[in-house]
Length: 172
Image (cartoon, rainbow, N blue to C red; front, side, top):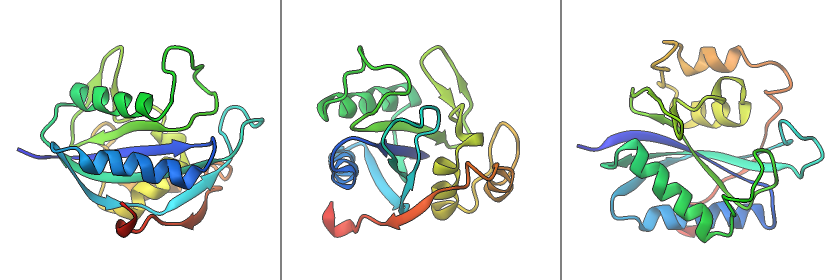
């Protein structure tokens, strides 16, 4: 049975749009998932270290038969293939690509390696706003809040996201 999953993509090194397109292409080629929906690309300041370059962020909806831990392993593999050094990287450093499982059906996971829904999503406009764009029906399985309510609770700084374009399916 296929599961509805949302993945956040982010990048702030090099050609940021190209990085997002490359990650999407790798995801699209996977035989065990299908990209169902793609949000616009949003530009935001780095959240915890303002000295970092600005990020491009987006959220995609996929359907997959993988379990959460297997999907996480696959996403980390893509990050490494694209040049991210997972062993060396600090938590809030620049990155060529960051792929996070935002939500996985109505599943709640709390392990050392994985937290679903994503632990920081409640305060991140760069996650909630693109998620609302492609899934206005999303309801958080932990809080019971609808996505519109979650977005309305963001502070003004977290709402500062700039829609800069999209990735046409033809580019994938």
